[in-house]
Length: 267
Image 1 (cartoon, rainbow, N blue to C red):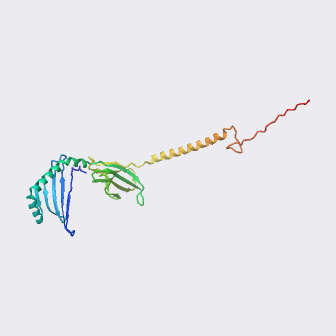
Image 2 (tube, helix red, strand yellow):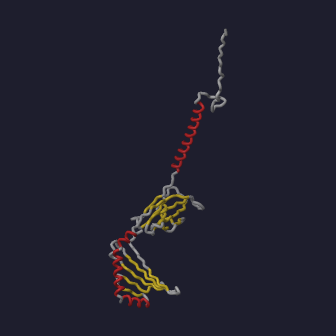
Image 3 (tube, rainbow, N blue to C red):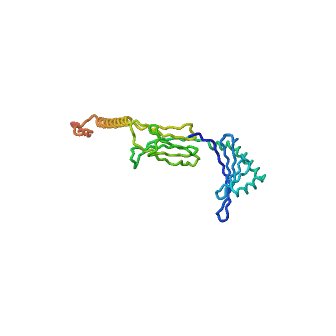
């Protein structure tokens, strides 16, 4: 996507309605520029009547140009009004002075891209990928799926550019597919903030990785089992007694007490 040139439009609408609401007149003021300092800024004042462009003031021409018969009447009146021409020159200079401010407001913001796998429900394909681009400006963006370097057009759905409410946007693109051994899938993002298209490769979880996780989990459970058995053995033998009838512990057996009595001769 080519780098977008700076372009700003400031609109001022003046609406005049007839009592019946059937006819209306409005004026649209636009300030256009493509430079950073505003030297090429152009002021356009367009006059519409019932959605028809009757005439337009162009600062590069310096007068009102009519496009209809009714517009010719307006053009003659306005072009012969020194006050009107003076105001248009003042607005043109104002437009040029405010270009740096407009450039700051229109600075492109690079998107944050998140590529992930989600559950493919009600689909004939085994997997589903989502490529999301967050917090970008301006609104125009292109998200494309590539399989082994070739553009994918089938089984692809995308949302519109969704506003965040803070001048930034987000978009989500979905790809449903059946994996093939050794193929490479990528999400390509093109935006005015990027000097070149940005590629985000999908890296599926390998089978060997899941095997290592499974072996590690089994080893952990086995270790816990042996630890528990050792603890039970320690508790049962801590009193120095093992009962054959009850291997888990011994009962406390009361030893008989021997009472010694002494007898003496009484005198």
